[in-house]
Length: 170
Image (cartoon, rainbow, N blue to C red; front, top):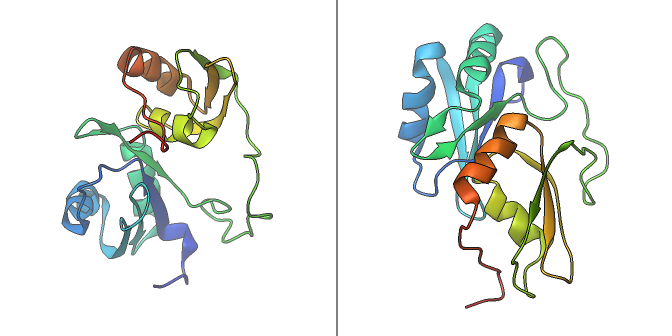
């Protein structure tokens, strides 16, 4: 994998589980010549990195495809963390731990099973968009924060009364 030109690399998240590299190519070829696609779909939610030949094409792809509805999944398309056009790579800082970002776009969730974890809740709500924070409480409630207002509204509309599954429930 090439990391020479980080300005032309984009991150693509919230992909459907059956996504293929060809599908990603079909989504992005119209923005410019693609150097490579690095699809990560073996463990956990699938995501990809796409590197364009020209940084302007990457910027166009981010602007056009972020929030795009693909097969019922709202795509998250952005420059990888620590990079933005013209800035190059910057280290992310510490690894594990709570997210550094919080948001005012908050949803209260009720009716959670006692086995539900904040990770399960966050994974469930990612179907609606970019979750930056999640927590669960012993009383069967939880809170989820989204980076964008539109994602919060979409979550309320699409996931209200949806079936939540904890990782411990078989």
